[in-house]
Image (cartoon, rainbow, N blue to C red; front, side, top):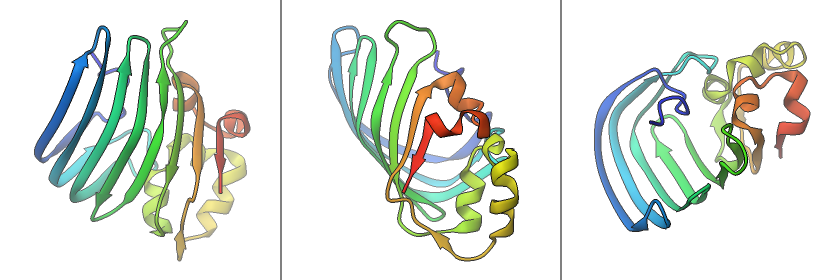
Length: 169
């Protein structure tokens, strides 16, 4: 059911999950839980690296599910390779193309690691390619990285739609 919305084509690893669901999806529900993973690898065509390797770590989440909207109160990923926190909403109101409004924050990350998780089309856009390819050492921290827009537009993120869909500090 969700395959068209998920960004990965293949994945492998070991998972141990614990979830608490209160309510029902038709009328509204709250979901909280955590997933502990080991040796996670994902083939993701949309990223610059084409493959992401979080390794071992955990994913914790708290969310509310309504008939036409999912509110992500907290999503926190901590792994050997990358860590981030996210909050936001995904709304299905009035369209088959969901409207996504997400805000991420990260601790300091090696630039090479952060670059591997960025969308390929973003890095291939003419304005950013030369700048980002010239920086290969150091660390970057996003105190606030926000994505806003329809999912189809965000999947095709490039310099043309960047200004209205992505903001960061």
